[in-house]
Length: 167
Image (cartoon, rainbow, N blue to C red):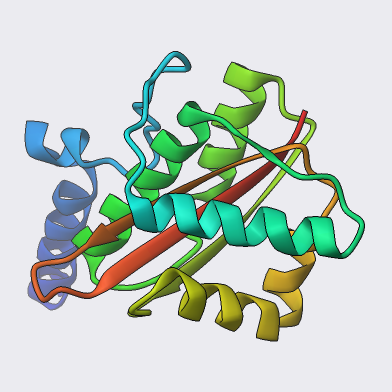
């Protein structure tokens, strides 16, 4: 009778070891850890500046207040781009951690994000966001600050994270 349970016991042991084992590399790449410092200085690319400009021009044309960019928000967005590149998919994974980082470090009252993948230009990603009700709602939302990061994977595909914050 015990021999009937041996395969199940072995499987249980292997599963339990795999859940608790980790290496330093795993910890360093933990996407739930937002590593940017609140005083981070962010070097914007011309494409990132263009997305921010497009968002603010649109908001202004619709009677909404323009948003102020904050380097820390862009640094947090950059971390998410790097995560999406590492897993090879566009996602809102771990948004709650980014949200909490903005609350803790900047006093955010609310935050939201737009993400995208594989758009060639700032205008093309901006147009896609406007064509989506949810993304457009973020662009038009009651926010005061924002940040952007655009990163490129090894194949030359761009990942975009645009974070919005109410302070």
